[in-house]
Image 1: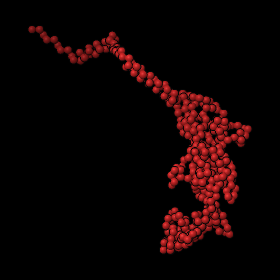
Image 2: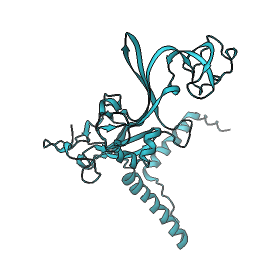
Image 3: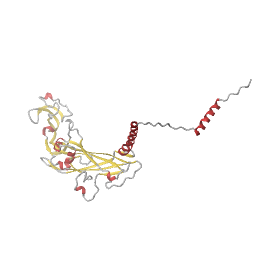
Length: 350
């Protein structure tokens, strides 16, 4: 009987299989199997899908969105404003020092067009305004002494006194007298206001690209003294007539001057540095910002007082001012090829 062969180790068999697999990589290869479908309709659909994908990348991604460019939004911006002009009300002539608030020339300012003046107010006791809730009364019992209404004009004394006009009575208050509604006189300043000129000086800077520009023509021949804004011929003369701003916002000037309102002057710097920097120009738009169709919140007014002394006693003139508030809003974006950082010089650059 023959002797049995010794068993080969399992590891040796595995090694031989791996060796055969490695050597076969030199002479074995794979190839995809191509099937040609002879169907005209399916072929047209297939090529149309390929064309749409190509158009998407070429037209939308590269031409419209310009995705090859680097982008920066929200420029650093400074705004300086200046108003010029005079007007007259029924009682006096007004200059710019009186009707522009605040006078610093920032991006938000108000031009007063109508006022209600309560002159010669002094500290004392007088009838409360009949517009204040629960201010009307029939006797002293209706007026609690020491009561302070946050919407009123003073602290109640506990007395019921005759009103400024008519047969009605209101509770007496201790405060600045007479109260505003009892003795105010209205004056309209808006007759010549449409001809006021508003200079809006704006400079922007995009730090990422070190690109700066301003909206004023840099000329030394007195150009700004004789020009007014025009989108075609005087784009870099940012001197606007107030009437022009209101008209472009779609508002009636006389109505707006009586009730007050907020007008936004929007300056957009949308620049493509693929082109020359001289093609980066400001675009102006105008619109009303306060909700004029909501009676509770439409219009614009504020109060201030002028104090003086008569015979040693402090007196003031209270003024409720209605006006046109101008908000200058600057926004924009700049695009530039991602590998490009040098910006071409521009005559309007500061």
